[in-house]
Image 1 (tube, one colour):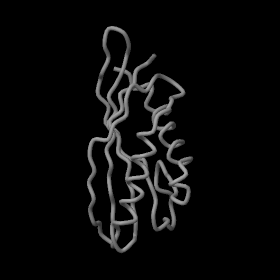
Image 2 (cartoon, helix red, strand yellow; image 1 turned 90 degrees about the vertical axis):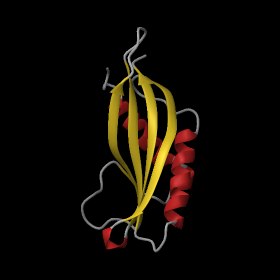
Image 3 (spheres, one colour; image 1 turned 120 degrees about the horizontal axis):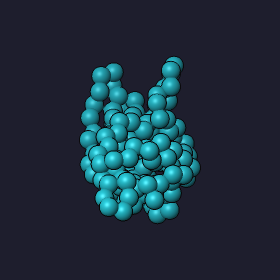
Image 4 (spheres, rainbow, N blue to C red; image 1 turned 120 degrees about the vertical axis):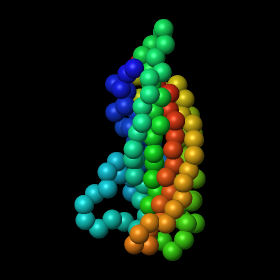
Length: 132
């Protein structure tokens, strides 16, 4: 197994989301900053990695979570941002600074209300990365 490309994958996703025109007004974090948070934001979250090495290369499956959080009254704004996140990550040309992205696919979503009136959508994507 190789966890070596995890940072390269996170950086590529962060850079793609931060530069995506449909998300230009939505802050993207890889950790929520201290202090007052914006009313709508995207956060790169948890990651689970499993071995996918074979005879030709070291590799791994990365299940990663992207969260959309809003203090809005409903889910409509968060759902539009979730659709934009999906479009950004499904667009071709996402390259890593180390290793090779073999695939990146949407797996599932979960929308829920949280305490304090927040709404949250967690999107899970699966990436296949190898060391070549």
